[in-house]
Length: 115
Image 1 (tube, rainbow, N blue to C red):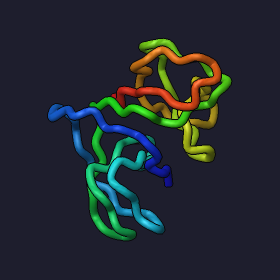
Image 2 (spheres, rainbow, N blue to C red):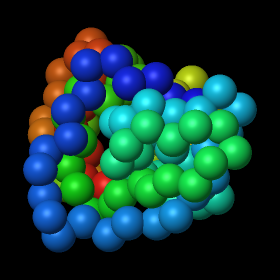
Image 3 (cartoon, one colour):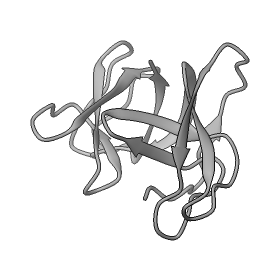
């Protein structure tokens, strides 16, 4: 489960929601949740084994990234579930969306469009 540490969901009423069941320990509003091959952001707290929603089609700021990667706006980004962070590496990771900002190599976070 990804932790919600300083991430900000940019308001967007055009997002697409998907129904999920809370994992062990549940999820907090704003957590990034991997459901199969789909990465979304929790729209509210989701208790363990309870039904909730994740949203796609939105931009999320402050998402952890691999600090050795440089992102450029429009780069395809992948979710490294083992490390709970974004990366440019596709092998073994899940396609997450597109970079919404350009980052420096040592930047700890990035903005992503979950599309």
